[in-house]
Length: 396
Image (spheres, rainbow, N blue to C red):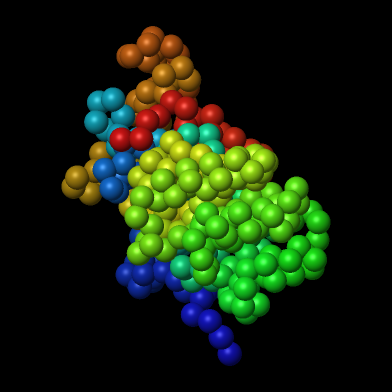
């Protein structure tokens, strides 16, 4: 009996999560002996929300999907920041599958699905991290989405540059401790703030920072002062999750809280802000005395990046559907200015047209005849790649 409306690993690998027309295609080409060697490329025509760049994410699951399937896969490294098109306006291939079409047609749906949502979440996270101007950001969004994908959401947000995640399983798979403070129900169950803050301090292990939620019952400033007086040097921070209906000028509230803390000698107490935040509000609030942000729905419910997977070569001959460019391709990127160029596969590398540096090939083999061949990178390593590359891009 299936308790939740989710697919198992075997369901995904066997093709049960495929669109039906791919399974029918498999049946037809097997019956007619029409299977052929192909090259299928993954590209995106345009990015959502007017984004100028995206973060490629989800490759780890694609490699697991294709393990045991006799094809080769070439991909840009996970965590690569990319535009949809190169300097000449050509679509940039992020991934290519090389092999007999019948061997992977049943997982074509899953292939793009694994990277579309993960890349959207990672991109939204990277944009928020950029907007935070170096301040810490934590992922609080798994409660808004199906719990089965909570680890994927946390991983994608972390790879996008977030500094921590609230999900227990997501954090465990990332090899980090989960991050979180306390919820409003804790305050309401105790009936008054000091009792809840004291109980948290007495029960929870010392390794967990004491961050008091200060907007449940009274004014944020006065709750903050009460928390600071109660916990003193033990208080690491306060969290303002002020409802939108009560915010008014939220930045001014935050400044007021900071002033009152400093005035009383609680300079060590940090201010955490959460509740309905996105890249716009984070950018504005980061100008004030905020130390860290908790960001949820705007990242976990990020628009997907609509990758498509298209045949560009059949039996060694270039061919494609209308609207796509035929022939296998290589994607090149300048290591200095990060400009991109797309050329037919097999052509030698060229100099960057913007800065004259030698461009580097970005599509690299990650699966050979169904076996992973690339070194498995940790999420932390991929995150560092994103943060490094993020310095080359602007929010626009």
